[in-house]
Image 1 (cartoon, rainbow, N blue to C red):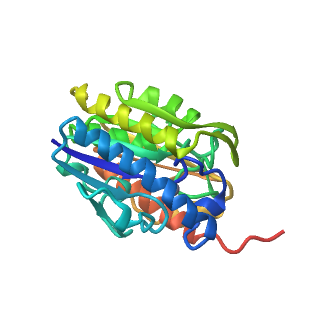
Image 2 (cartoon, rainbow, N blue to C red; image 1 turned 120 degrees about the vertical axis):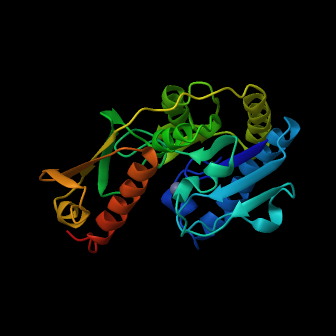
Length: 274
Ligand SMILES: [Zn+2]
């Protein structure tokens, strides 16, 4: 039984502000230890439930956040940003997936809510529904026949996950007060909750229905200039002054195109001003 843990940072225990997730910041150094607590708890739970191979895929910022010398010896980690499936690298070789440290999508309430970019992307819709990173990653996993068995993050991430991973175990490690404020449980508590949930999730592993394409992404920006940048991709059309859309037959192609859209959108932004 092979498990992929996709590990983001905004939804990690105790993380509440941009400095907590900004590589190089002293607060990030501290938050990395909380990240190891959450990730290692999931590994312990999965091993206890019979997992034989566990891969942790770094899914935050430059994808170099884990403290490898503190990683549970029974797991391996994919470290580095340049990988074909991004946050979901390794899912093709997995029997189950876990999303640890996930967060709410752009434009929604939630601790450090965003979708790929901290700003610029205002909202993303996938086949007409608001799409967080968790939702799109779960749909990719489902297309590949891989069920999501565990989601951790704030309470609003868990509420979101109840829609797109209804059979997954969900652990709220903090309660959202505001985008930059949360009522936090300490790692000693959340580690136990995550370990128990991971074990339950794998024990109750089911079959996930394959989503039917095509898959239409609609991306709304906070300004007009990303539209020209993103519509350089041949399948991406301008749908409004601040929006683009594209339709592709599989989630694999659609999620990779969305990644390209975010890269171009980010490159279209110059320094803040005003
Ligand atoms: Zn992140």
